[in-house]
Image (cartoon, rainbow, N blue to C red):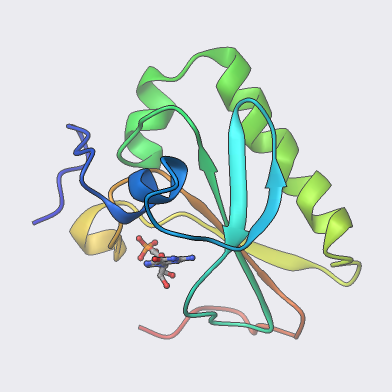
Length: 122
Ligand code: 5GP
């Protein structure tokens, strides 16, 4: 069971941040890092993570400071512009087991490059 309240440093995005494993960068600031998803679910699939340690959007929403919240939210449109997602895109953040979260470091998915339909299939 994934722990959405207590951060575990031994997760793949923590390792990416520490450069212990490689990633394909899209955008980076002092606060956030965005990189291509290794198993894309759409023609464009990027993951945005804060550099600070939050295990889920729930944890981030409760605990994060305003600077990091602003940086994460602002990064979405900046990245969408860089990726030329002019026709629209989808953001997703899975939370916990029932939300389908696999990696316990808070992240926002940006998906686009085609018409995605109304919902993601279970
Ligand atoms: P979640 O299900 O937690 O919302 O999404 C985790 C995402 O991380 C998945 O879309 C998965 O493909 C991606 N992922 C897992 N391991 C790696 C990795 O080592 N590198 C990259 N770039 N993405 C990964």
